[in-house]
Length: 148
Image (cartoon, rainbow, N blue to C red; front, side, top):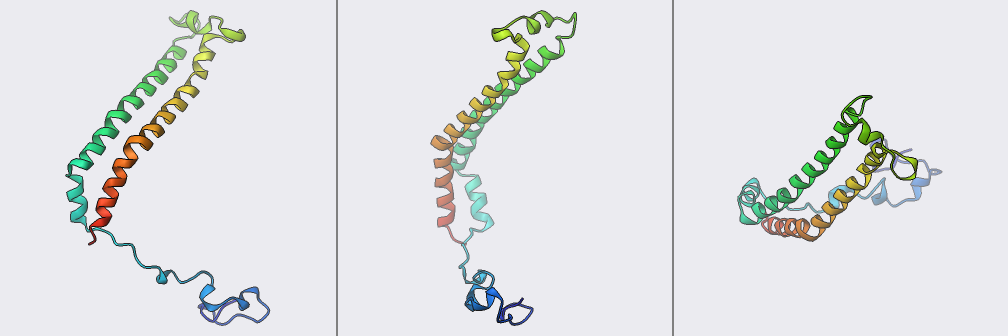
């Protein structure tokens, strides 16, 4: 089935598309949408060297790196304890000691990885919403205000 605007020629009269207006085949022409102005490369380079962008990078790095480091240290600490918990190993007594509800400490430490990850994610979203996104939005608006 084709439309008079399609490359395959006109549609047959019994096809559902036949009754659509020509400008609805298959979607409105994308060329009717005006282009979004983009700044040239010099504006991006100037913004990269600006104080606002450097403040955004510093704010991101000063939050993300310590948070990721803390979560990874906690995770690898658990992995190390688990690896060393082999029979006769140095952490066997700790990891196999009884914990709450009949589950050993090693199992509870493994379950603690989930809330740790969720907390780090929640904290990142909160910091991004309150601090990073407004800074990035200001930079975006400044860049879009400078048309090429």
